[in-house]
Image 1: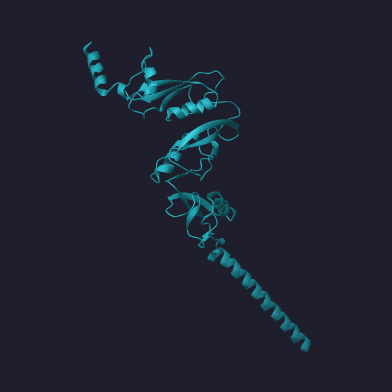
Image 2: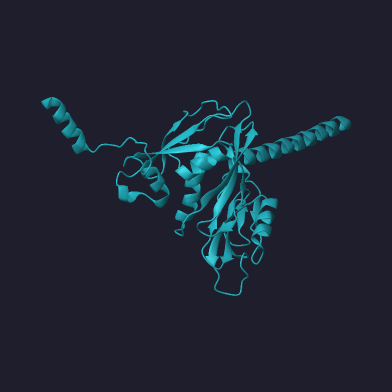
Length: 286
């Protein structure tokens, strides 16, 4: 009888312990799924006084993303050193948070944007916006090198200087661009600035003939059309012609285009509405 009571008591104790274990497990699961277990928070490190490259590397090592912004130093902080951070050191942030590093500079500088995996035709606008957003000018595309790649044709694979580098307005960023391994195809250059379009084809080993088209419908010295058409497979000695926009007024010519004015060739000229109307009236009289 006594042993039976003891046995029942032991069973009850085990059941209570098991119930507590189950309850604790359910509580933890409920906390995870319903209350929410937040991702580990990280302390923004103290980076003041570090070199910009060193600061960016330290942020990357702990799972944070650094962005640079130039400020004109008014104290004894050496040029190129981190002056302050936003959010400030010691702030708890989630992994992957972007941290702005304010870097000492003698004059306003532009942080080089990341062009990797963007299309070449978009790169120029990205560089322009990088300076326009802070009101201190713009960056420009520099040397364009083409390499065969499995990546989509026209995609930027490398850039120099690296993203985050501080440059003065007007500086150039060089890029390496993918071309199709299966064959060289004519890229779409329409709307691109003429000098960049010429650089793009020269980097692939092609000489470019240019032809002006007098119009006000397109920005000056942008490619309006091209021969051959985009997507055409290019043979080694194929002739490339770029038709680009110039204003109808002869006075709008720059010095480099005077040679084109004096050639014996004639080029299509966009007619004004008044000229079109006069021509129509003349046709009706005849």
